[in-house]
Image 1 (cartoon, helix red, strand yellow):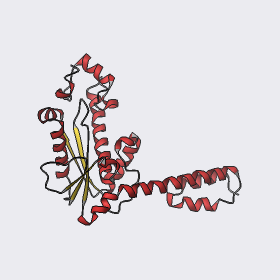
Image 2 (cartoon, rainbow, N blue to C red):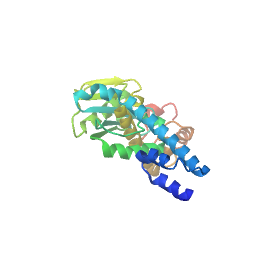
Image 3 (cartoon, rainbow, N blue to C red):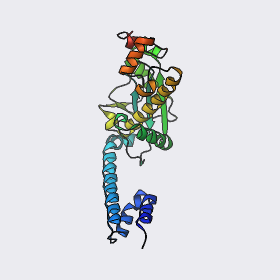
Image 4 (cartoon, helix red, strand yellow):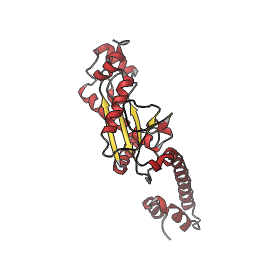
Length: 251
């Protein structure tokens, strides 16, 4: 008879598709350790099935418009911070993609976002990223800067989409037909993928800024107005990456 540790290793080495077979294989083993293991993996199987159903729901807009051709999800991050750029991302996923756990980037842990970032870049048909810095944000305002970042992201796609699925907004100056979806990053897999790539891209940039502009906590607050950030602003004054129009109440 196999040791429980050996069976545990077998389960750990098995792929998700084999979990049910493993549970069935060892179901007659009455040892409490094995039964506990089976229970654990049956919970994982249920959770996986629930996630597949959730993702199917996240594909509702993609299925609705798939007859048109390439669908592009668009989202941005960084409209609210006091420092750093606004970053937009455009993502075209394959119609038959099997990516799970896509969601509004704010609902995911940093670790999960990083993990999904790699999966999205590997699986996507095309990814485009647009970025508008603080000086331009001050010049044209944050809404116009967001639109500009989105237009940049679209222009950097290696294929032309037939439809844009946008998180809440309609982007001016774009010829491709658009469907704005309120809370789209929680309703569309394509928009969710764009939100994740935009968030990871911007977060990584702010971590780099923290190395050259220490003292403001950019690595942790990502340029948002945390207590630490505002206190540093009052003490040291603004940096070149601060948005002048956003910090006038603090300096």
